[in-house]
Picture 1 (cartoon, rainbow, N blue to C red):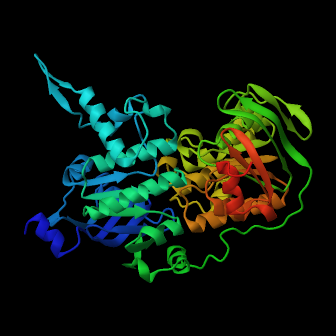
Picture 2: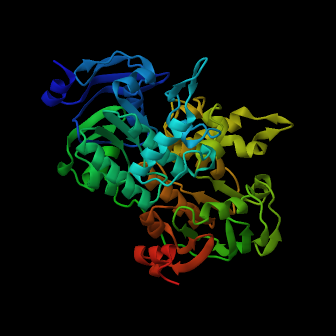
Picture 3: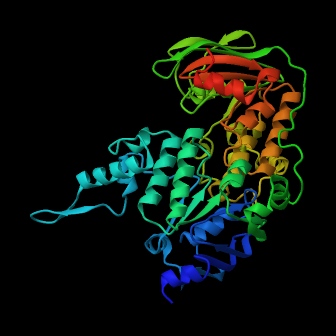
Length: 507
């Protein structure tokens, strides 16, 4: 049976009884998956359920302990990522790993550069590489220059380049792991158009997402995984949001945004006329004790850049920061931490975690002075506090000694939260706090936000998900092109009002 006949006769991909264990953890236990050509098969489950592990097995990053994989009528017996790519399987990871010093074109063709023949020996044909990249971008509607250094792009830009890279490989199966976690609504629409085009050409897509609106829109089939086991599979039409959530987490989530009305106190943090040349200008804001202040706006509006200056990651050119009514100088993160300001950054891998260290070490890292006695680190006390935070946030890990880099994205985000929640805080800045996190974990984090607001913590939250902004904010400040375009109290904060301010429709 040739490949074309095999595809016509059955699924393009069939994974049977897949098992995989890591030290102390059984990641997958008899999981099966069937994917049809020309369809989007959505894979859902909480962080740590085993979705990414299953996909890393399929893409050749991990070997299986037991089970079978059949692709286009052939049994796959390992061979690594290169073998998977040669067979027509490409994966776009949630956590990107570009080569920032190389150009966009060089990243797309890395390992398969077009070659030319010179007088003496073959050479990399950079002109052909740039021309082919430009042709690809023209087809996809991307506006990036092929020669742009990858490190100059935003996270959203890098994500779109990774998508283009997978499409350029002419893959028969593309795995997309949270592809819209860091891109704007406009870019999401572009991605969905490309998905429809890929489906029309017979390409199969495995799509991992926690966003229920996306799942309802693009899924043809759905498989739910919980705790390393396949819970259920079927046509997307058989599932509504409540049923999916209940299958994913084993219980019904009745309040994903458990916002409570709590007493709002005095102004804790105030920014007056903050400016950073070429990035944002004349930004002023206040956040009060017990308040959750939402920062909304389109990608590139300057939200993240403003809070980076509040935490001392970037320098200010003008403006004043006041804490408790008194001017403070914040020139570096250590200054902010000393003043009781903490920040959970959007890019947890680059700025939130030491991936080569353990879960416990990461949790205690920012507050080591709490565990020092007579010049020595009290390891027992450090472990007790780290374990308390692990249980509070339900971090799924075999032990506190497990490497932080081996955990799922959602569990890594929880570690970052735990690190700051150990301290005596006045202000907590959350930049996309639930990006790439499943609905169960989102609900837990939102409850923690409400709990800390109730205790008088001032919270600044940046989110690109409007339901999260609307569901959790007491007040919303909207930014556009580096400036504050408006402010909305909770009762006036609607999706229409926020988008009008974010796009400039309301002046």
